[in-house]
Length: 179
Image 1 (cartoon, rainbow, N blue to C red):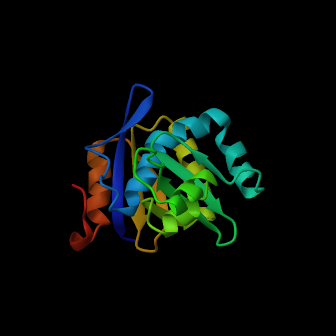
Image 2: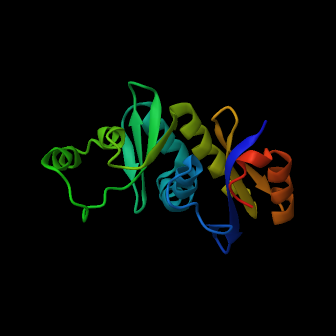
Image 3: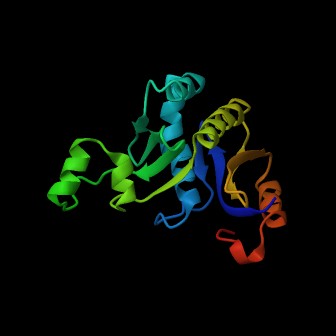
């Protein structure tokens, strides 16, 4: 297994913060997973992570919006869209305005009005439930990564050095994006 992209987090007090900066602008897929963990996941935990996954699976909810990131489930294609939120200060055409009014996030992504990445629904549910377990265990460091099979995953580490060594051991030098 090789890591294509990664984002590292460290626990400070009762919250996880990126080691270094979150990868901006959103040119890397991992940026969205990292921002979902940082911005959205604390809210998902408040509602109950397992309950929220069940709501998605049972099509009770098709998405969630947070301050900086949004989840939208496309049940037709079995994909989860992780996108930036709509910037209401941005100039828009009447067609885009209609898509915003109808809350058609997937189409806004398709026409590249919103920056986004996708993952399978199964991968999203796996990430959310994994993050729940890692946080419950109080792990000091969490690595979120995208592997060479385009699967997002997370691991816990007791030290920053152990996390850095794992990344170094599992990253091809030509695809490293973060030290």
